[in-house]
Length: 557
Ligand code: TEU
Ligand code: CA
Image 1 (cartoon, rainbow, N blue to C red):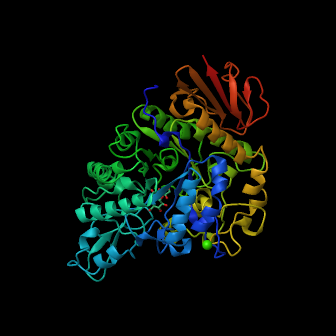
Image 2: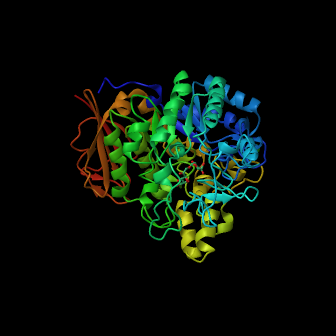
Image 3: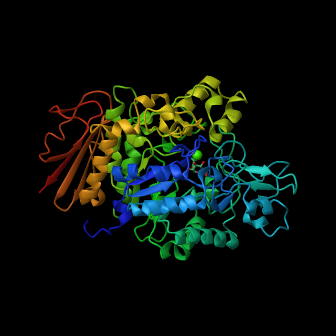
């Protein structure tokens, strides 16, 4: 295994910033670039190598920046290009790197390209987007948007429809047009020349549309699935190889695709031959838990060990030695990980947050930490539709509740469990007003548990979740086995214990994690003589794991 190709992006730990909610420097209630710059030492002290920042480009914010109006300008709420340049140089001064979010499957409908395109069939930008005639008085096909409703919007002016796989304010770019690829690649080059260190590529698996046939309709669903025509196609791979050749290969970048899909897909995107991307995010251990229900993610589905471990272990086994993996449980599209996979009660919050942290930092792959996760921040559990900001919630509400198809109380329960807004509440910095996030009125309420959960208290407490993350990150930076060790699953029949080994040369790392809030029998670690690298409990009980206990032992033969 020592022959494995080393790379800085395999050894790195990435921290995701959702800029709107990270730190507000000027009191308007919205996080901004100067707010990020002011907190770089906090990230450096945590041990972070790479910062991935969610979109910071000019945007009307129908989807919080994932609808870009101008790829070469900074969103005015976030600051100026001078603020960006200063942030980038301060990141580099501290030896960290910056990865930008590349949202290029679609733009905002306010992007100059779309404003032109919409003017009519003769406009030179018409083919920058996907325009089709309707069929039988309706849209061109039966596809549903990821955010509810049809994926087509009729433009009254020309009578044609344009495709939007997300909101109608996010029209899909037509990658089949070489001018679109030129424009996107030029823009990427422009950012690389500014000195950024990589791209996280939003829904990049959807860029290669191959046909516009009706998609299969799942039982109970209202629209057809676009995936067979748009997801992980040969055409997408062709565009990515072109992108590699024309842009990515010219710089030393971290590239991570937000692709979803199976390990078969990942093996192509993230192949060790580096013909496309360095790594991709799998979704089988989060969104995949909801497969088969007509409402998709809107359900009561929990996260029992078997359902979470099976996809995670499959990605570990299928990719090793062949493609590089990512490891994450939380991001800006998922609820808070301690609320979803652990337990956010006062009793178990810290210990379960540390157990989950142990998992993401000891599986094979580059770990991604989502802001506030290192403090054990929890879901906010809104109780009324009016409290939500996220367009995904409001569109789903219209489609299912206002139409009478789903009961309002049921939907609110699903939202409280899984809504993206749970992860988007402001970062909890200290015990001051609004948790120190803003002196004004925060755009989304601060979780009222900030007196219990905040960065300042945890930085001052050596036993905190924050310091546990700091220790895990330091271990990655000292032990090659954590980065390059082969993954060997253990105890796959257990409903309670997630266990595995990582093996590199003469070193064996053994990890045992109790996924439950009960003391459970487990002899694995007792039989393992070795050095304890980390644990979330100060003392252990022979033959058992305590509630949410995590143990990591290193043996050298
Ligand atoms: O998310 C893509 C995506 O597939 C999401 O719809 C995801 O499935 C859902 O939010 C949660 O399960 C990316 C971005 O990360 C997201 O924030 C954007 O809204 C979306 O693309 C459109 O750009
Ligand atoms: Ca601000």
